[in-house]
Image (cartoon, rainbow, N blue to C red; front, top):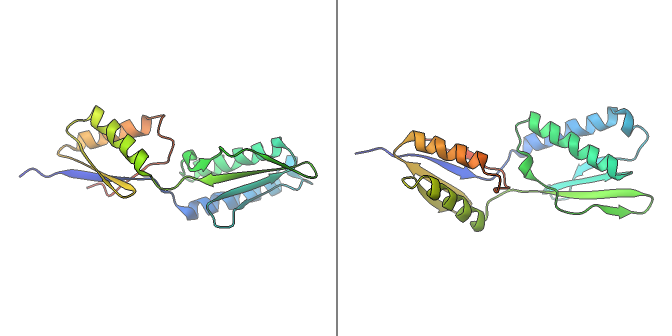
Length: 167
């Protein structure tokens, strides 16, 4: 009897690591010369489903985004977590605010898209959509590692993917 190997594909991130990246960003903003004397801040939104950046200019908001992204990379968080599609809001007093939502979870559309991409390249690999995870199984470990490489190289997948429960 042949043993099947498998792993799960999830779209999630470690909230503690994101909190640490945000704390480091706040410290760097407090220390940087170009932010001295400005009223710039970066915080979680009310329900911790995103970030709220507040700055004196577009430059300050863009600089804060660069800082948080560099801290995320150092903490092995994917940059695909940040959904920067919302426009900047211009408030009174030359203030600029931008809300950045977190991408977390995989809807059925993405799950079907990922399953199709796997089946097109690796027809012997089986995929099963289980809620917001995808179980990928095969008799060959090499095929499973090939699937991981394929998904990491896909530019069209704009959600963060983690591979868990590798057996």
